[in-house]
Image 1 (cartoon, rainbow, N blue to C red):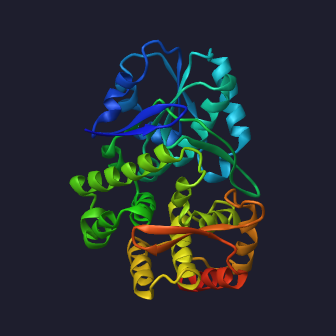
Image 2: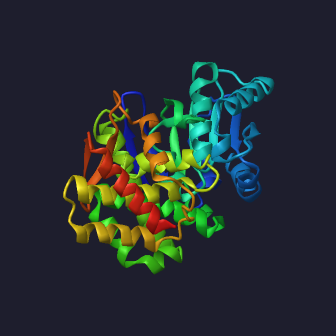
Image 3: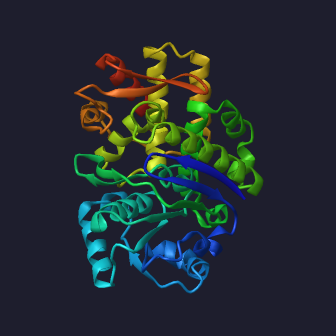
Amino acid sequence: MLSYRVATPHRDYDSIIDRGLIQRVADHVPPSAGRLFVVTTEDVWRLHGAALAAGLKGRDFTPLFFTGGEQNKRISEVEALAQQMVEHGGDRTSIVIAFGGGIVTDLGGFLAATFMRGVPVVQVPTTLLAQVDAAIGGKTGANLVSGKNLIGAFHQPLVVLIDPSVLDTLSDREYRAGLYEIIKGGVIRNPALFDVLDLQRDAVLARDPATVDYIIAAKVRIKAEVVTNDEREGDLRRILNFGHTIGHTLESETQYKRFLHGEAVAFGMNAATRLAVRAVGLPAETAERIIRVVDSYGPIPPTTGIDAGALAARLVNDKKTRQGKVHFVLPVSIGEVRILSGIPEEQILAAIEESLQVAV
C-alpha cells in the first residue's frame, strides 16, 4: 500500500493506492457518520457495486445514480441528487461517497460541498483519469453551456481511495484517456515518469500491474505535492493546467459529445507544445518528443469540421482567464513549464491550426 498526504489549510488527508482497496472502504469512513450516499452511475454500479457494498461492511448507505456524461454535468443534476438525499434522510451527519470517473468525482464533490452548506466526501475513483487527477485536490464543479467547470467549489475529501484493480474493466479508450493525464505529469514535473511512458509503452498499454501501479503513484505524488503547496491555484497549482486551456475549448466547441476529457487534454498538450516553440523557444526536438509520446497513446478522435478561430474565440471564457488575459502553461523542457499570458493571437491561432490539421 502507498499513501501520499495532501496537507491544506482546510483539511489534511491521504490519497491511498492499493489493489483491493474497495473491499475495505468502511475502514476509512468515520464510525460516527450518519447515512452514507454513494453517487455513481449505472455502469459503474453494475461492474463494481457489489465490491463496494461488501467493502462498506453492512454500513447503511443509499446509492444515488447520476446519468453520466460531460454534457450532463450540470447544476440541475446536483439539485436532483440533493433532493434525493433529503428524501432518504440526509442531514449534516451524512457523507457522500463519490464512486466513479472524473465527472462523478467532480459532481459528487460539488454535491457534498453544497448539501446543507457542506458535508464530507470520500472519493473512490474508478477510472485512471479520476484516480490520478480529478479525485485529488478538492476541485469540484459543474458545467455551463459557455464553458467547463464554471460553477464549483474547493471541497477537500476525507480520503481518496485508489484501487488500480478496477481499471481492468476500463475500455481501451477510457484507459488511454487517463494515460494522457499521466503524460501531463511527466511533462510538467517528472522527467523520469515521462521516460517510463516513452520507453515502456508496451507494458503501459498491456496494463502490466507493476507498471500501472508505478505510473499511478508517480502522478498521485505530483498532484499531492502541488496541491499541498497551492490549494487554490494561486500560483504553483496552475501548472496542472497544461493542455487544459485549449483542451477545454475543444470540449465546449463539440458540446462535450465527441472527445473524452483526457483526449481533449491530449490535443491541448500538443497545441500548447507547438505554441511553446513559438512563444518560449522550446527546442524543436523536445517538442517533437512530447508530441510523439502523446500521439503514441492514441488515436485521438479526428477533429474534422472544427474551426481554429472558433476554438481561439472560446479561450476568453476559460476559467483560467484573468482580467481578460488568457494564461497558457507551456513546456520549456521535459519536467519544467512556464505560465505565460499576452501571447500574440496569431501565434495561438497558428498552433491550434497546425494541431487541427495533424489531428484530422
